[in-house]
Length: 103
Image (cartoon, rainbow, N blue to C red):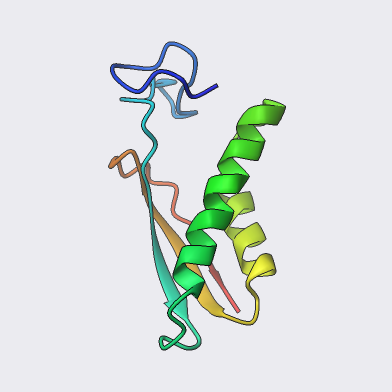
């Protein structure tokens, strides 16, 4: 579980060449998002909630997080609203794992 919010993680790591520990457990993810209709005032909050639930479900099942799978699932769930979503950073670290999925 993501129960430790300060200090380096002893449980979770980034699957980079160094298998780096997460810098902290208070997760922060940044995305660039282009919507088909910028006047929709609630869709961004719905997408944030979807991602939050996705991460919590992944944690409950013990699954690994793969950003391309997450962005694809977001696009599939919000197909009528999203032009593209691009992963930017995880815990404010550019991981070099950018995935841009466009419709």
